[in-house]
Length: 353
Image (cartoon, helix red, strand yellow):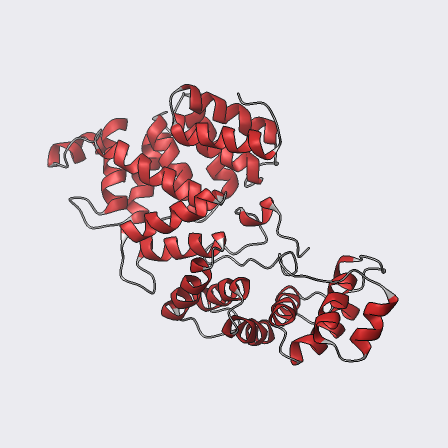
């Protein structure tokens, strides 16, 4: 599935949690020929572009019976002649183990050849491989370099990945402004991960104003079972405010508060579960806590629950449920939910809500 569909830029299971791969869309931006006897003749005569097009036809099953091995055969011939898109496609085949034995090192080899020729999708994938140490020694600085090259060419997933690097200070000096800049670029192209990150940043700004100051008295009240104090402690520990940053301790206090029905704590616990922050990543648990918070009317929880339904993370994909929760959030004035509804309606050629 090399066509770049809207679902492929969302956070779905084909992608790695951090430093996700494009792994698709290889020929959507290429001027390729449809299958024909003439195309076969040109490919057999050594025409690199024809070999690439023929490989694409076999991969997709367009004009011929789908055959991944035959696709790899022709992509290899083209790639060895230096065709950047064929090199990228061959890298994807090795990465996914389609038509060839899965081999991450070989995938990196071909992503590198394509990336060095300036092919943006290969640059994004190569960045992800360096970020995660997949098929190559982990090198976050190198990851940032390739993400940047790809992001500057407009690849939304690279922009999102680059934003995460700036936000977390991984491979680059931490810079929230740069993070927001790249998240915004990716979000404008419909990248759901970037939209979520921007929403979380807005959420943090909103929630920070509602916290009482850290104090010994606050800790005593939290230990005595005060849900508001427990929630505040969770925020302080997660962000390193007035105390040393301790994500596991944050989860501990969020959990205590959430179990008492504190909507904001339920939302934060859902976010921790989704990201794997201070606790094991568990999308189903994230959905569970989003829902508890959303059912209490928390607009951000409704927004994030909608994201889960639209992408099928932790729950069966259901566009109607996504729209339902976004409507609830939008009715409370959440601007991100309003934008999601507008984007969804436009994407599906539906009348505005």
